[in-house]
Amino acid sequence: MEKISPKDYFKKLAFSIKDAEIRLVAAIMSDYVGEENAVRLDTLCRRVSMDERKVRLILGKLVTEYGVPVCAHSGKAGRWIATSEDDRWQVIGDLDSRIKELRERREALLTAKIPNALELNRAEARVMQTGLF
Image 1 (tube, rainbow, N blue to C red):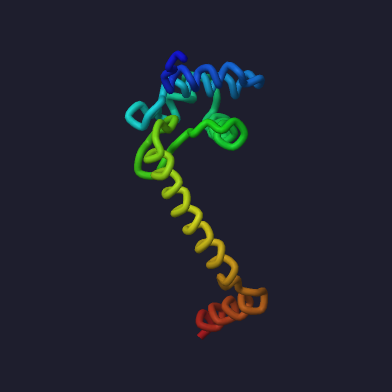
Image 2 (image 1 turned 120 degrees about the vertical axis):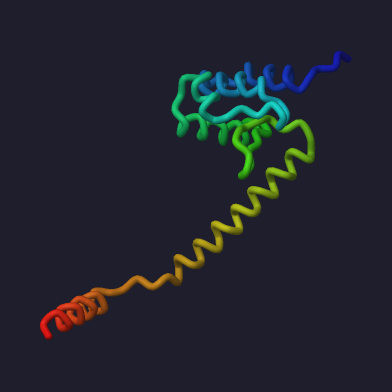
């Protein structure tokens, strides 16, 4: 059986995708296999002639719908396709950290004080009183 490189594997996978825009991004991403070959998002956007929002959505779909291990993590600019379990787990660890931060932020928002109209009117009244005397 012939051995196939990761780049060729992901290129072949890309050509099996029916949606033209997703196929294009997947094919271009096959040039960026391994963290050492990461592509900056602005470069990827230029290569596929799409805006950043659309490319981000497509990269997400490549992971969730097509099983392509597209990686990114905070502290490093760029996206790449994982070639090892170390790649995968490093990114999963980063995602877990972000999930934790988002949960903490959500919980803080649930209990954050939002002043009601009566409290706001009292504050305005106090400002007016100090200005009168």
